[in-house]
Image (cartoon, rainbow, N blue to C red; front, side):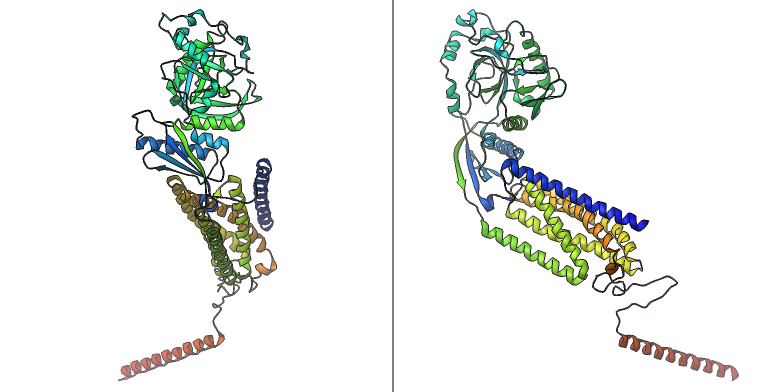
Length: 574
């Protein structure tokens, strides 16, 4: 019963490993089919080259950029790039003004927007517009069409005269003077594409347009700043029943200050829902452009509004990442965008792979010499570990740098070390007189503790290195961490189950000399009543010589004892 249970567990473990491999393979296949990618791993800057973008700060006359602002901008841009899934990017400062961003391959437009946008977010109330939007903000099941506002609304008479009343709130039409109205009428939305930002003081109105240029607005002063956002995510908007509407949106979470401010603002705007459909709306302004101007359908007091509009999955994620990681401390413009060549190239990659192949061959040769047929278990385990690691690297979209390749080479030794620890524990149990099946189980209990302790140290070191390092060093840390996890999976779900099954075979179970688990060759000592056996492996001639030497010593000892007794008896007689 115990044997059948052990075999069943071994088979289940191998099936589990097979399921993991199939899931990884299936996920990679789906990724390749959906993105048009390939089964070859991507390469990093040092091996493939890529794109270098130099960002120069946009400063007003007399303004200087500080090192603190540059360092903060570098950190934010790095977070944005990492969030977009681009790995092995390099972001550094150039001199005391510029920022240099180097990205492997050719980045898409969304990635470029992540890098270049300052992501200055403002929430401003709508005072006047020449058209109406269709997006909403609130907890409604479906977006409410804002077309109830006239397509070309008639200006309030107060807009045509000089305001004589001080505005009472940010939505008050008295913010609009004749000069501002004339500027609005002459404002061309196409000019927004020619500048990085459309800037206005936070306490003054802003004339701007939607990002696609379809709507033009006069907006009131800033009521809530993007600095009060604590988190932002993207996803499909659902209705009150939790059913997806198929519309992509951005979900914002405000901090305590922003939550209170947003509740106050939506409470005021909601009061216009039946009397003024224009002033009922709230513009979300990113870098001086309106990305959405929803009508207010409810008072939002929990600080968790959602932005809907003409979002795609990619643009929603881009905006969420920009809002989540904050605005750049200063605005930047692209000074240059160039293609750069690989700093190392294919020759160094081939050299690195060759070094890994040599190391692998040495491990295989050592395993076969030391463990004979058992060494093939090591080879098979290494092949399984390599396959799973390869699938994980592809699935994560990780770009291999020369440092990452070095991490994979180091992993060969780490993985082989686990097998050696396990095999030696089994041999120790055989030397103590256990049968092979019992030795496999007892050896596993002792070995797994050592393996977990060793791999935990490796994983901890990789984690610390990944968190503190930048650039290619993080690639080394990532591959080291991934292969450490794979090592535990393979030794638990492949190596141990295989040995459980092999222990039931005649070749290994009876200790064939080529099995690597021959108890006699290992010097096993049986302590039961059945037999005592001297350690084997000593030549017969040496054993005979040792026996003769022992007999000679025994004869000398007996003769000396007899002489001593004779002398003592003689003394008594005298």
